[in-house]
Length: 284
Image 1 (cartoon, one colour):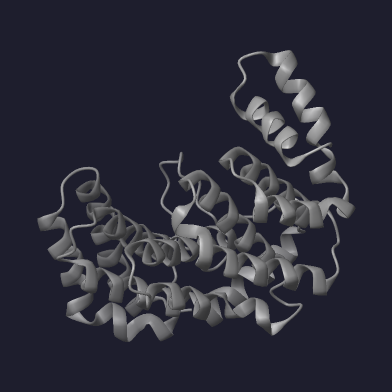
Image 2 (spheres, one colour):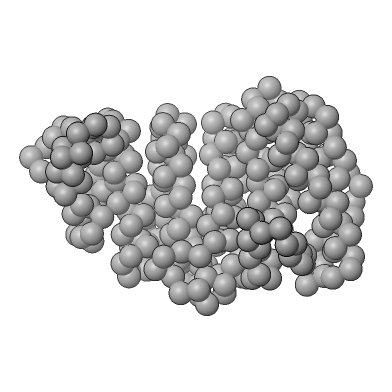
């Protein structure tokens, strides 16, 4: 690769070209970034210096593949993690949403794969709260997006991670972090109820729903099936779920929101009702 400008041009063709031959050539030229661990430092260089969102997307998606498919050293994974936290804090608000989303997915994947390797990987919830405490709505949104993606990542199996290890991580995450995230979502809903930035409300609502629909006991329900699964909630959640103010916040949002938010609120409200009953009957 002769220059960063040349790479940016190739990335533009990779993601935007209507010519399949041109796209295939760009993909073949750029695949070294996702298959060769020696190119990980080059991905960071691209993130630091590229001017186009497609080059940033290449770097992020390549790192995601590297983290997923290769056994990287602990220190390298910690470096990637710390870099991403700082990068999102400093540059996140100015990035295209699809780039931000890709970087957050990468952060969540690194966190999950390193969950048992070093306690610092588990600090991601605390660091997400740092985004929520900043003055700008953009940083607040990034914090909520990190938590949303983290819950998704922990709740679904990954290529490159044995199913037994996935379940161990998911259970540990459930016991150590999920309830705190659920409380953060409720706090955000209360704080944002009169907020004019509806995207923040959407993110907070989505986070609440993800927490309530987490696969608590490892018996994933097929959403296409008409059969209902048994839901179990950790007993430590009981005081919050039995608090009338918890259900009331869902009714309040249902009253003030319009579709599609109101539809999602109906689902969340229904889940909360069921959870309130189930937590009394069948706690984990």
